[in-house]
Length: 566
Image (cartoon, rainbow, N blue to C red; front, side, top):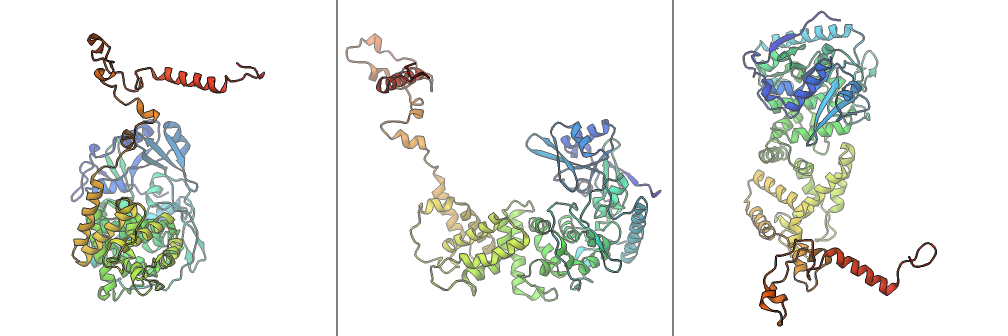
């Protein structure tokens, strides 16, 4: 194994242009998991995105833990833990509120051969970092500047389709191939390793940092803290090799660069342009999940511009073959960027919108052609374009492994637009009578989706938002009055259902008393406890027994096993 030792930085004062990590910024439940692992004799650290976000001054969305303990050892320490995963076992420690803390065992790169692989990876990283520093002169380069020399370069490599699972990080990868054109795609990442090997196997330097809770130190095996200080996104080791091992890292690089406002390392940007077509080798659910994270991120318009520029968008979505060299002058592309920018202002980087909204905004122009354009049905003016929409959405959903409920929700929202949006052919036509009326229509899920699409597209195209405001006012008017509950309807009936009679107040004493009753006997009585008595004041259980006895009088008592009355 390599003799290299990690760089250690005090978490409370890690250096200039790096935010300190304070214990108060860490989730207490995650902290308790680390402390219990350490007290049991294992090594345990916070790793990955949570350390990165804390050093960049952000708020982590989750706290992942890496430990030397094996999954079954972790499960023995926590009663609420469960082991998940088939190719690589992880442990989820469950806390109240369905909060999950993910704990993984240290592992190493499956392409590494023995203990010398760590030294080779470290040397490759050192040479790579030095070369990149020399090329950039040690200065921080902007995201757009680092891509200026590679945008538009396209690779001639051909992709081969492979199957696989949809795991979120790098858990479902492959390898194999010959010496000249080695296929480095990793399919199995199920090899346990040491702390240093676990750091080196990760994708980017800023994701390879460990935080030691007991000593309050940041442990850096890969040079991540200097890259955080320079706001640079760099791979661990050779960029070309790392992207060929897992081409989804191309999408992750774009996501991190736009979300965290980082500059791309020039060698990484060049490798992204060279190997973007290898994304076809990856499992479709993983690719689609990363696209959704980009669309729900902070700056989806900027990310899509980069994906179009390096040719990734054309590979993933041939339905929209934007040319990298002429995208800026393409009105179709400019409208897409305007819609994404408006959607981002609504979503605010929280990924709070339904998947159907992201899909509809991304493919808006193509969907409109199937609804009210050249590809729309022409059999009759009232014909709904269900088949034409399905002809576009079904192949897209099958190729990207989308959930059928998402594509069905896109179709339902677009069909609802034909009723409420005056831009479409039947927007101002006479409406047919529909079951349930307008009030039921505005309560449906597809109406909310259609109204949100109207809001985003009207703002992106600079149109008068009066139709949007009109339908918002109608919804508020129709839904402002609460729905009439069933017990309110029954209250108007002469005879209440049995389960509602107990809630009825007792009649006044003056009404229940007969004319012959003396005044002293007609005094008001205390109201019976609700649910205990019926209208006539008799106990509810006695009424049940009386009904049973009456049934016995009519039909006879039940017989015993011998055929005689019990």
